[in-house]
Image 1 (cartoon, rainbow, N blue to C red):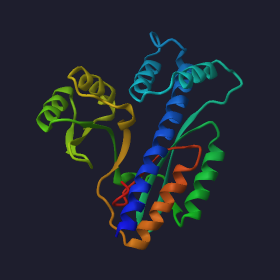
Image 2: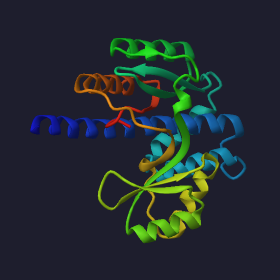
Image 3: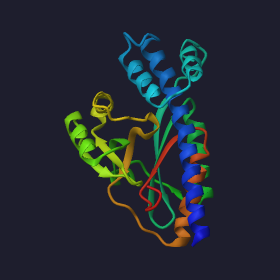
Image 4: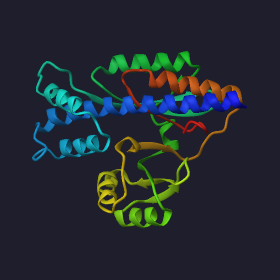
Length: 240
């Protein structure tokens, strides 16, 4: 039991570290994409202003911001495309994989290879996605009454208990995500950009046996190791 628990803790920490690196990489690409589409001035470029606000919440290093703003002026640089892949995992689980890539052929090939090597199978568009909902997710800590009041006044859809004591998961409509983050901050609720993002949430978790659970952990690790992959969502219980 202790070894299993240690493995779970290590997996959770590794996933958190991987997600942070993925978040930084995705924000950098979003900055370049927004600046290229609407110009490098956040005063006149609303999309860039929103991305820079999210980058600030996530404590994105200034050198990454500067580098990607400069990249936006490089006419030889490829444009980024947002792609969503879907796959089936061991034990009947489902995965939604987000990629912001400058080469869709490369990203499709590397994602497929990672899925196949881990015992999964690529799925047709929509065959997995229907079991997930696109929502804003904000993890915060504090007193439950204070969180509930601030979240409802900010326009959130729901507030759920988090994984840790004193932690709460605030859910928003995608279109309201940025506004709710700002209103929570104005109400004195600390919002960490690393714990706030748009995500695909499963409608119901899928429980699998120990062998399939281990195989799903391998699949998650392989997908997060793909450079073009920015985020991975699953309905596998214990990994969602």
